[in-house]
Length: 381
Ligand code: PLP
Image 1 (cartoon, rainbow, N blue to C red):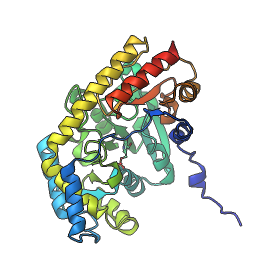
Image 2 (image 1 turned 90 degrees about the horizontal axis):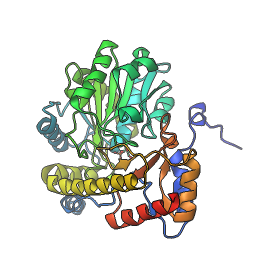
Image 3 (image 1 turned 45 degrees about the vertical axis):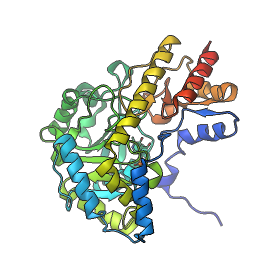
């Protein structure tokens, strides 16, 4: 017998990133600038807290929404950082990574036939998530000339006025773009005017190098229409612990929790203990990792400039998004792996507007980065 795969799954192609990882795996001496995860391990204090929780036998489920102590810590953190107040009982949901939060938001807040405007280029899960939920995707392109920022005009021209939801991500994966509060105000104005719900993925909020992160939820009239996704994967280098959270008004988190309580029950318990400690005592460790990323960022940007490769000054996350010196970025990336054993990801993997670019992750040690950039220079000579 053969399985009849659902139309929803059939409609989604496999991730464009995976193919490059598979190619890279076949190569010896590979330096991967392809992955979107920290090369650091989680800070020791967080790991110790996880270990201690296991030693104390804390291996049960937690409350569906997550341990209250963690939700209180998240509320304090968001209050201190952004002067935003969320009720730990009604407006915070702890999830298995930001990924689960994003999926829950689509399934809980998007009806079949709803239009979801998705910033492009973007993180690989946004478009499949809309399709799995039965929504219609409306791409909203951002452009290198605008440093990949969303603009009022761009939203207007793409037809986002008719959408129900707008999905955005700053600091951005794959471009490394950030937006200031003033710039985001244009987006907020558009959302208010056209009564859009905003899904704001702020997983890289702590990794900005030019200016502090502004959450779009802090802008007038936005908290009540925004679902914020955040988590511990990036700033705290905890990708494998799978822990994130959602901030949103009660009706939104209650709807998401309805799905979460049946499908996930609760986010990983051990990770929740690590996260409590991370919020309590790991600010310095996060700052130190950020300093390292910034050093690498400046190095990568200056090396591309020396090679005569255009690269806009990405100010956040841990990605540079240079223009590809060849017309065909897929062929460039493939041949770079084969000839120089350096893996980068072609921008087309991240949707419209990504073509002609390469995503170069600098979540890799400086020595390896130096070697990788030397190999790229050799390749483009
Ligand atoms: N959002 C963005 C923009 C990402 O780049 C990633 C991971 O690469 C995620 C979400 C996934 O985060 P998590 O590990 O918390 O599920």
